[in-house]
Amino acid sequence: MRSATSSSLSLTRIAAGTLAALVLLSACGKKDDAAPAAAGGKMPAPEVGVITTRFEPVALETELPARAEPVRTAQVRARVNGVVLKRVFTEGSEVKQGQSLFQIDPDTYQAQLNSAQAELARAQANLTQAAAQAERYKPLVEANAISKQEYTNAVAAQKQGEAAVAAARAQLRVSQINVGYTSVNAPIAGRIGRALVTEGALVSATEATQMALIQQTNPMYLNITQSAVELQRLRKQAGASRVAGGLPVTVLLEDGSELGVRGKLLFSDVTVDPSSGQVTLRATVPNPDNALLPGQYVRVRLAQAELPNGIVVPQQAVTRGGAQGDTLMVVGPDNKPAQRTVKIGSQQGQNWIVTDGLKEGERVMVDGFQKVQMMPPGTPVKPVPWKPATGTAPGATTAAAPAPASR
Image (tube, rainbow, N blue to C red; front, side, top):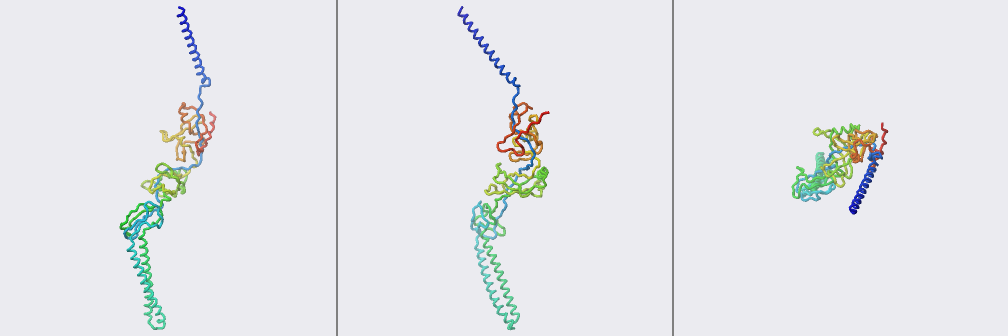
């Protein structure tokens, strides 16, 4: 009996100790839960990076399609008839002006040259004889030893001899030119393509057989096409009367990368193509390493006009192509962010040019979007100056404008 009573007392003590511990833990938990309530029960406002907008003149850039075209193109054609003996250039290489490209069989033309030289010698001999006779007849006619008619015939023979010499010299020059044409030379300097004739081919001056093509690819022309409506819109938007030449042009290759050198705009056409409604602009760009090839499709970016009062915001601040169009978040005077629909004019580096929807001095949120999404709608935020990775966003100041006193 004593043993059972002792065991019962031990169990009672253990149960009492456990209950006391549970009560103590419950009291501590309630005390900890009451701490935030005692502090007011509000989470601190999340920090977001903002910029303060301001007006400034900005260039209106447009991205347009273009085709590369050599600044000079020359078709190498045959200027005499004959058989091609050999090709003396490397296909695809750079050639100099006057460099020999093909050799046409010169034998026929060399024979004609020899004949012309002999004809000139014969004409010169006849002239010498006629001139000497006219010289002998001159004192005789003065002494009435011969008739005037004989002297006149001698002078006429001398002049005919002079004419024959001149004709022979002209024929000799023609023969020399034809012999020179048997060596087909490069009319311009540039890059030559594949040979269009082979050794043994018969070429004709009458048909002007094309033998090769030379293209001067440094610098290179860019033929840019743009809608006439878009061009007029840019002029109206910027208040400009025309697109000026000499504007810098950035070339975008097919893989999206930029060409290492920039070109410049030369002119814009004054006529609209009635079939497409487009105008043509021409630019020139250096091409020393032949990164651009004739006929290659590229895109170009150029600033055709300037907007007097534009606002520039970083690209990461704008959501493009949504259901409401292009939008961004504006932090109001009460520090509450609100979505705003804006109109984007064009791109400027890593920024967008906003042409409508923003006023000067407004605070645009650039980062901290995830923090705002985790908070209930209408929750105030703490705007702080946005610090970009490199430099300051042009067209806006990173100093957060102080919130005006709420009414």
